[in-house]
Length: 134
Image (tube, rainbow, N blue to C red; front, side, top):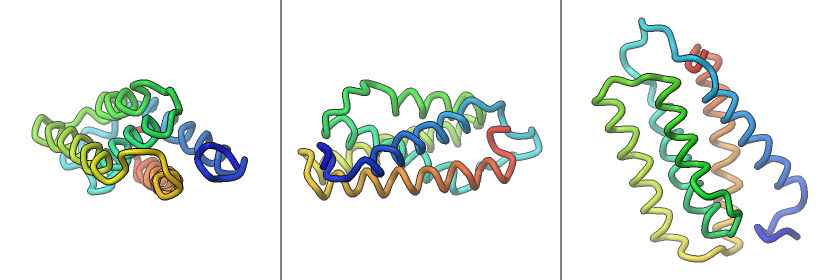
């Protein structure tokens, strides 16, 4: 078992999830007609905030990777100021709530990290299918 309490398959999923999220974030913004961001975009901000803490506490040494992914997402989407502030608040709230719940890396923290990666992958695929990040 790895440090996160999962097999090599779990490592692959995390890498694949990071790659899919990175691919979404590297795409140009959604069409200008989309004035309001979908709720999934806000959930993705929460996932990124929680993952930022979990990956740090479990010793991945990724530094500010997930925070930077959040910044890239906002750059790719180009939200209006109100939505931008809400995305930031969701990221920060999820980070702090996760930090309060998981102060150390445990089997539970590693499992939560895996679940969030899977959810993030699904959200990124759904948003890409809707034209966000294209």
